[in-house]
Image (cartoon, rainbow, N blue to C red):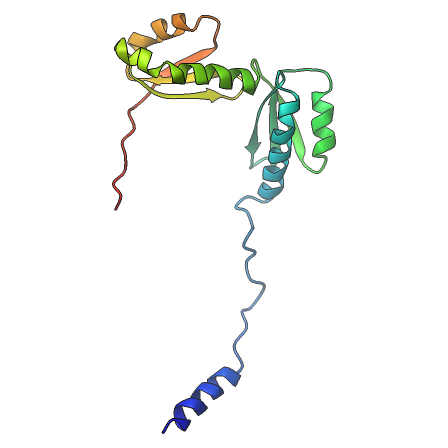
Length: 172
């Protein structure tokens, strides 16, 4: 009685299987052609950015054009260093007003001041940076609060914009 199921199982194991027509999809294939090469190049450029703290502002990708955008405060030597680092991708340099490190430090300052603003009736919902441009501060009422927030951080490039409180999603 046990022999029949074992024979059926052995026959199933030995039977040839149909092969898929054509190659199987590559698990690392990106949505855009060339996206992985651009992403890798962006990571490499980002890694050397620490050597250029007053110059490097960030990277972004123009996927439809297959171009790596390198944002930087123009300075001698940086562009050539990037070109040598990633010769296999098309790079476009974008002039920036401010380096990433400077904006990040100012953003950290605003984050430390969230309680200060709360005590003064200003709801700061978000703090971030716009590459090479400004520290973005999302507040509840930008029409009312932009002038006072900007005045407090005199000399800091701020972009005060409409923000919204965080609404946690349910666990289920």
